[in-house]
View 1 (cartoon, rainbow, N blue to C red):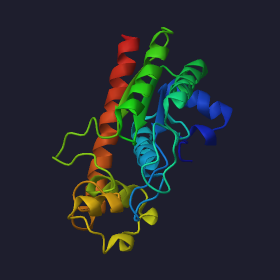
View 2: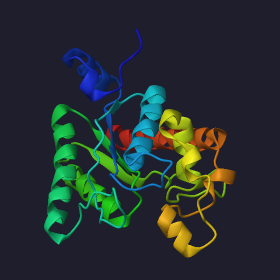
View 3: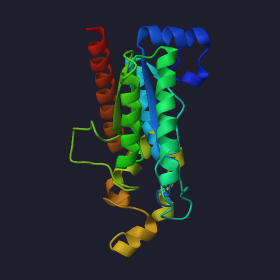
View 4: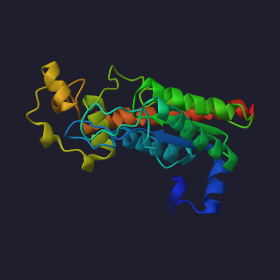
Length: 234
């Protein structure tokens, strides 16, 4: 039987066994946001979540249910407005509670990855990391999904070749390139209307590139998890 890696699918004894083997919890964070007409609105969280599944499959650990709520203003139709000063403490408190809850369960390392690549979101995850460090029982790491990528000049973008390639590999059934056949990506006005910022995904995106990026990030996250765990066991 294939080893389970998703927290919500485990029986209690399976979670206990997973934590005993490799006490690392992986948390994906993102948004519900316009990513062009060709990508799903939950793109940010989905890519981080599936990269972490790859990590857990190879290295061990447990993937926590993804969190779609983050620092996000309504800059385009179909984008959920979930950020102003009144909500800042709510989001930070949510992330902190998730991390502390995982430590209570028995995890010793918690890694938070945001696919919504904005500094306030990473900062909120970092505050959750600091909270579990204060317990003296655990440590963690906060990152955007591309922070550890080191293979090529490809870098994070918005709905362009990086994000499109990742989704072509991770969830190809959710990508519809025919929806952007006639987009104007040559002008600033056109890019804003399309919601695509970066290299043209129609000519630069591919499942092969997505696989290369996702596998490398998953590998680097797994190595980071091993390093962090070793600092606690040393």
